[in-house]
Amino acid sequence: MPTLPREQPEPAQPHQARQTAESFGTDAQRYDRARPGYPHDLVARIVAGSPGPDVLDVGCGTGIAARQFQAAGCAVLGIEPDARMADLAQARGLRVELATFEAWEPAGRTFDALVAAQSWHWVDPVAGAVKAAQVLRPNGRLAIFGHVFEPPAEVAEPFAAAYRQVAPDSPFSNQPARRPLEMYKAGYAKIADKIRETGQFNDPEQWRFDWEQSCTRDQWLDLLPTTGGLTRLRPDQLTRILGAVGHAIDALGGRFTMHYTTLATTAVRAGAP
Image 1: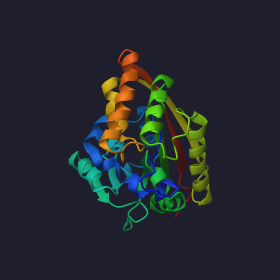
Image 2: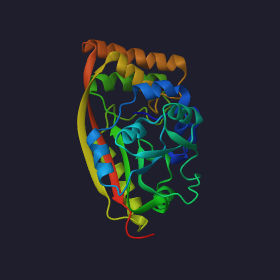
Image 3: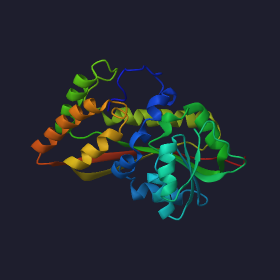
């Protein structure tokens, strides 16, 4: 999906685009309500492959993934730079420290697992991998994962057309409405490369989970404003895009099946520190 209109140009590297990175808290309640959780098999596999229950959640947002790890018996500490997101996560029972991961002070604390759910692209990929090694216990697991949000063409094409009309100067306005899964897989392969470069982890693994969910018109229109392409649009721009997408879903009978792919790059901290 498009990331941002070119109102105030930001750096090409996602982790440097702080205005976009910290725009998701504009409506934290909607974000928490609309964003999907993560496959139970993914959570179970991370927990089973970690030496203990202590989990650090980097970029925890409102705590969507963290609550799943808590339900699996883990003790979770969240790190989140956006106070609006952190406040909601804390209100729902998560311990959160307000900071970017790069600036966060572990104060000697270490963890059995470090997870980043839909958030690692906002972390410096080099500094983040090095710091992950520093805060993980021996045999601790680093797990970076996220969803591929690509609705069917009948929904994606009207979205792309409306976005081009609303934000014609966006650097993303000429991109195809749907991007191939291989593009996302390549991104996770790059994450693996940065993890290898630290020399502190066993060889990273790539995991994939395919699942689907029936999505109503209202559910999809609730989720769309929480995505990076829309969080910084004006209300009138957002209304135009949601109107076009809503009309397209109405033509499908008011709902569609969303095919999700959740990708993960994961690696185990090697040896003794």
